[in-house]
Every structure is written in C-alpha cells, then in structure tokens.
Image (cartoon, rainbow, N blue to C red):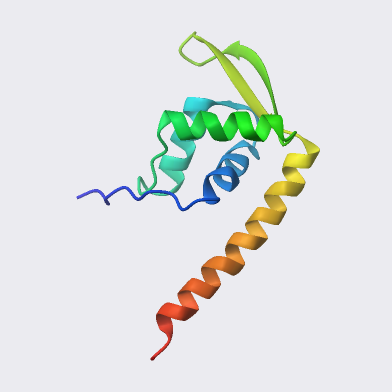
Length: 111
C-alpha cells in the first residue's frame, strides 16, 4: 500500500523546487513529478502552490524561465537555477538539515 501523502511544511517547498532544478531546466509538471518520485510518493505538490513558488523564486532572482516544448509536444515554461538560486539552495539545505536534526532530537528525548 502506498504511503499517505503529506502536506509540506511552510518553507520547504522553495527548497524542494530549487533542488529539483539543480540538475537542469524543468517545466512545472516535471518539478512536481521529481518531488513526488524522489520522496517515494510521500510528498505531492498541488499546481497552485507550485506555480506560486516558481513565480516567487523567479521574482527573487533564484530562477529564470524560458518558453520551450515539453516531452509531450506542448508549449511550457522551463525554469532553471541562477547563481543566486544555487546559493539559496545551499543555504536552505543547511537550514533544513539543522531543523530536521533538532526535530529528530526532540522525538528521541526521554522526557
């Protein structure tokens, strides 16, 4: 039986989107699919929050977008990381690792 999908904690979506784009340009659906596949179908991103994140990251200069043709022949916007986006990804990864370590530590505590 497949794992139940979990909602993303605030602040993690941007990091996941940046991570999905680290290997190269992707359109929105490919970003969503990457997140779903890499989390063993535990995380699923709905369209509205995904595109809000992509537009926010574009506005912040972390990603750039160009029109292209998807693998199914449709016109799509392809997003790619900028130098600022790579720096932001490193910072967010470090921050999230510290956060997750603290949460795990709290759950392992006896008291």
